[in-house]
Figure: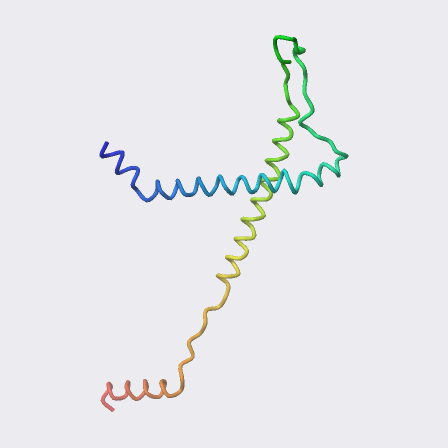
Amino acid sequence: MQDFKKFAMRGNVIDLAVAVVIGAAFGRIISSLVSDIIMPPIGLLLGGVDFSDLLITLKDATTEAAAVTINYGVFIQHIVDFTIIAFAIFMVVKAFEKAKRKEEAKPEAVAVIPEQEKLLAEIRDLLKAGK
């Protein structure tokens, strides 16, 4: 039990837990972006095609059991969603990297030493040298 407590209280575990929670929330945001904002115009461009309606019926429904189907359209829809989500995340990461490069490329402010301080430093150095 002591080893488990040590493991659970390590900083890496806490960081990982926070990352998972934030990642899940970010995943919901991206999923909403794809399904609610990006997919409607794409569906309109494709003529209202909804892949999730595509299926193969293996056994028709009876009064006692539902139909047995292979829903390959749902699979295709998930692939399309994944591709769009991956591209959206790629664009976000690329934007962050670009901003980071701009931040790193900024020249650091050069400290301007007033002329008085330069002269005082020279005098100090001459006094130390004994002249």
